[in-house]
Image (cartoon, rainbow, N blue to C red; front, side):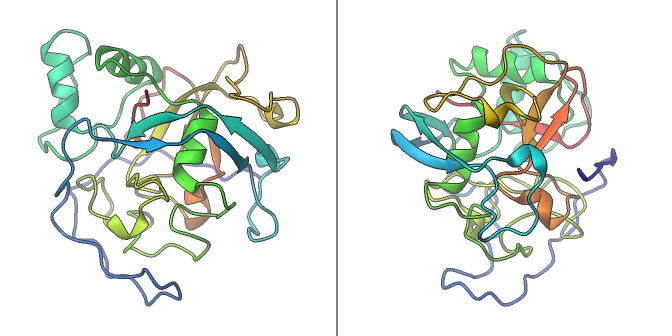
Length: 259
């Protein structure tokens, strides 16, 4: 049964908990400099080619029905934002009159959140980009080797992701560098959940095209990906899918753009 995510009102950001020891070689505490080395609008390149999409039951014990079948998808090359869109970047769109203003977001490097699907799409269009498709988002998050999380198959700690009880609120983008995806995208697990371009259909994978799947043509809901700052570990898996109404502007919903 799909986990039910309850709306949580963002509290003041606390210090992230220290992670437990890891069994993978690239473990270590994340830096505390937030978006250090990451400029607004920085993107990472994802090369053309096939990857395996959906839940890899060989290494993942938390598969949901809508993550099946595990299947090969061939994508054209694209780029995706290195981080979630920040409040400072979004404010520039609002100042230009292309995005609605959002009150109560004082921290420039924290991801914008509490936005509906249309608002996220409008920002990406204003920036000369677009929302990623669901397949693009998943490839950017996990690469081509069928890993469960962006960093590998080991369960998350607060070193890799802001989730559970780590902070209780969104943190500045890029703080969890240990959780980077194979292409260098940051915060693709936790912090804020991210809208993608696709309508949601639980059975879409069974009939989706093998090349550049665009998602269902219609649907009442759109998909968000990646989990958020209160998520359980299984909701941070790269294959996890969550449907939400496009008009939903819950406190945990943000986005990043693709090109």
